[in-house]
Each structure stands twice: as structure tokens, then as C-alpha cells.
Image (cartoon, rainbow, N blue to C red; front, side):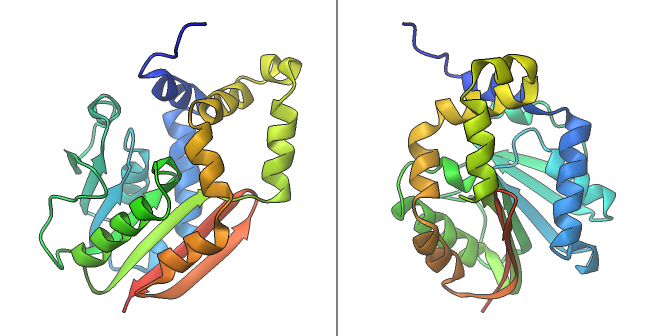
Length: 217
């Protein structure tokens, strides 16, 4: 059997949903987590920003000082907009201390290879870069009955053939199986690391997601 190409996950990600679909999804999340009430002149950095549709969603909400960070130069080439984009590792950010008002991750933390070490490194960098009182928003997969049902349906080849979106999701899951399962196994540890040094502002768990906002203490 041939090994998957290095960009196989990115190919599946690009098949999963169109840019417009992803932007609408990000807008729903941002509104649910209260982003419409945040100061529009806040300096906002999205980590693991991928092809930048979260940045487009933030722009649609009126934010003007935007920045994206991702490890993949290939994904960043898909972004066409006013935000500054940087190829960098979320565990070692190229920004000065207390330099940003809001930092956001939507679906990047579960790719980290080592828990809790890598998550602690990201959180340490987020706390360092945020100004006092700055916000950190996280949306990540979470083991819920709905998520288990989706993956059960995805175990049937006929279902994957009939639904391209499900096939793309299952392909991404297969290619990140080790880190994905590691993430889903550790909900208590993850919340403990996330909330260290933050006052929880909003937290929702449901429909296969953790949606969380904390303020830097």
C-alpha cells in the first residue's frame, strides 16, 4: 500500500466544504461566542488559520486589524484579503509580549502531536502574546454522542460514496487518527490546560464541538 502524500490531509480539507460554507460556519461560531460585541479595532490573530476563511468571517463582522498564522504555506496561498498572514508554529510565535487583544483557534489544537506538552506550549505563547484582559477563543472537536454517530455512519463505504462531505471528513480523520484520538480521550486535561490563567467567559459543549472563550487574568 502506498503511503499518503504529504498534502493528502490538505486535499481532503479543501474537499470538505467550500470557502463560502466555511465562512458561514465561522460566522455562526463567532456570533454564538459573542464576537459581535468585541471592540472592532482589536488586534486579532487567528492561529492555525488554514486558507483564511476565519479571517474573512472576522472581516465581515467589522474587524479591521487581522492577522493569520499557519504552518502550511500552501494553505495560506488560498487566502486573498487584507489580513497579514505569517507562516509560523503556534508553539513558538514570532510576536512580542502583550501585543494582541484577541487570539483564536478553530480546529487546530487537535493536530498537536503531544499532549499535554504541546498544548501547554501553545497556551504559554497565547498568554505571553495577549494583553491583560485579552480574549482567547477555541473551537475544537469534542467527543459527544453526535460525533460518535457521525463516525459510525462514516464507517460504511456506501455512506461515504453517497456523501462527499462525509468522505472528506473521514479521510481527514484517518490521516490525523493518532492526534485526533489522543485529543478526544483527554477532555478534563484539555480544559484544565486551557483554563490555566484564564477566566472563562463562554463555554458550550455539544454537536461534536467544544466552543470556549476565556479572558487572560
